[in-house]
Length: 113
Image (tube, rainbow, N blue to C red):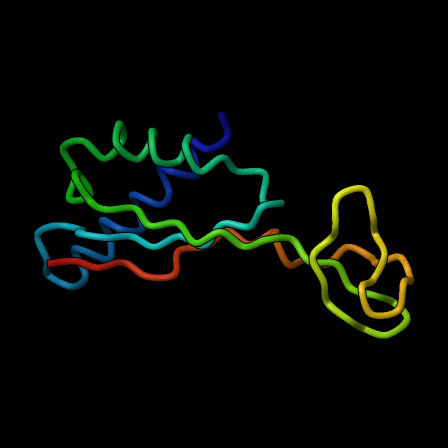
């Protein structure tokens, strides 16, 4: 449910971008969404279609780039994807620690015409 107000803000930002560029409509928005962001891509898409009706965003393509979560080894510094049921660094075997990689959520770009 927290995707609704976030999607509202995406649409406000995109509409403002459209106005500032003296364009009539938003054709595409690219979002970057980390697996640990806590946001559900399908909900954002659904709300975008509903909230975007009657705005310059209506009918715009929403592209989402997913960012997989990575861990960092405190011993050797290796960044790695965690294997199922394991936190071990593939390089040295030390248990990895969480990073901010995978928490991303931002608009990468907005295309207008």
